[in-house]
Length: 201
Ligand SMILES: [Cu+2]
Image (cartoon, rainbow, N blue to C red; front, side):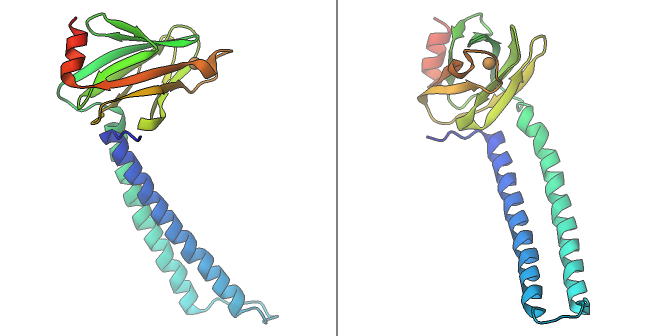
């Protein structure tokens, strides 16, 4: 089951663009190298570059500069979108990491241990810190991660459009002691009605 958050969707589409661009350049450059090796395989003299090969390298260089800088700019634009939650209604949850578990405290004071309940189709903002050593909160099925640092607050956000109970969906990504590998939490994505019934109870 793969969940998708809009910020991550954009991030992943940029990654795919980089992959396609990088692979195309690699195929062109390697293909050209193989072509030159075959073409000059029986030559004992030093190989002189022809005018057409210089043109090929120049065109390739210009394409790399143009496409590369375009991708770089779009990545720069995507970065704040990835980290800063959009305006509009959102649910803010404070996350306290500790050796070895997760405390999720909601704005009304409700608090859960190793379980995060969130409503579907809602921007969820996690403000993350640590009570002891460095931890890192990651939700691999959502492709989001942020460090939990004592005395410091980090933010990440996501939005999920399908309900479900995801066991051990939240994990620690910073080696933090003997219980590190057991530092897991479940993620429950429920309907907005079910969430607010629980939240206000
Ligand atoms: Cu940890």
